[in-house]
Image (tube, rainbow, N blue to C red):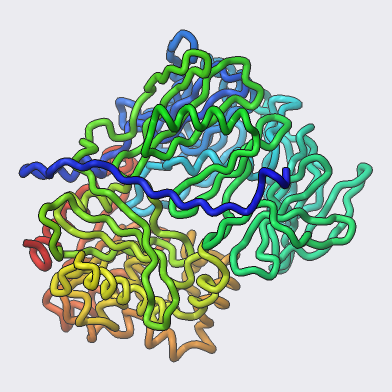
Length: 640
């Protein structure tokens, strides 16, 4: 394995021919309506493909396709619920999670369900809480769902059961659910598990537990569990052939994949997978028994193939589908020559294809956005620009299809969570919509964002509204110097943290940003710690927030300086605010409080409010309406 898993540098640069933009703009709804297909998976025996598709009722459903006959069977289709996650349990059995459930339809509650690939033997397994979501959320999932299959190691094939964490008031424990009977069987494993790894025979061999904010590694040896020690500075990612692999920094700036010596309780010094400039945050590609490769995101998604046969298949497909990311899936113990391919690029959303290795023929199963003309989309590239202190900041730049090239109005688009990457080299509805209207789109990944090494991540500690904002403003300075951006026509926008950054951009850099847009934006740093906002500041995240954003008691002065609510009077530029009445991420009341403080001194403040509903999730009406308002707002303030 060492000879193949060498230190590699994966930098992908693709160029695509683009046609001249037509005079008539593409309608807003074509960008933001629900995609026709949002994921696909091939069965372990390679005989069936499972597609998550949009039903005629506007709901996400599951359809099974026989790869030989192409016969289709819809196995999960509900008028009042959407399919979220989906998994192959066996050659015949599949499980899925239902969300967005409304009353009065054909399913009662959100939860975990199972069914055979012919639609028979339906079973309700466990009830889940209905997940809160923002009015501006999309149902699209990209290809991220594929990584879930190897998060806990090798697939479980002993019976048609699946591992779950059972949560009680006092602790969490590991259990098996029989997907036919719903029967739960406790698993011999330490309680309070947060991560576990299965070896190829399906047994749990590695468990990480969490108590009082500390992670501990446990290893099962000779039928008994042995506590190894703290696991705070590494993450176990695979156990195979008696070897534990972990993701860790191990004294280096970027995290890599290493072997871990269980006997000496130490990470071995030499990495087996390392990518200069990026953390190796990804997942192993596995069959039932072997490691096939490792998939990760650098400037784009990449797969390091360990298995020569899979590398050969990838090369064949890449030759047939050039200039695209081609994510391949092969049955874990396939009995057919078929490979499922999820293909996409910056100018084209996901397309799902079957490839026959014997005939070398491709069969298109469907596309997420078949109605969008690729020639009218705008190319994206990744760059690194210098911040004012010399740090190199990654960013994605999307330039409209305009000739001749000249400085253009620009939108700086900031991600929803500050610590997560806000952009990928892939088709993005918001980015492509803005580019179609003639705007350059800048998506900086400022200090504090994970994935670009420890120095980049740590430099953002307690820098909300401070050095992080400097990085964002410096992105505009760089784009102006490149001749991309007209410095007199720049707007900053985003949701969640992005909305916060947009308002702080107006406060700190009024000469740079001429207007700002915030949907479901954070406005008061102190309130994050009071409300314990879902997905942002729940109880489990509070220690992380205190360490990386600040403490509301000890950093009160800084919070006052860096909270838009406390500085609303300093915002004089036009502002568009949008909030959902039932959003759980940022309470509606917080948004309204900020608007009232802003409107008291700023006549250019505009307010939108939305009421999310299951009907809206089907039609995306609120999201479409928001972007219609954004289009009008931008045209008025920085447009032609």
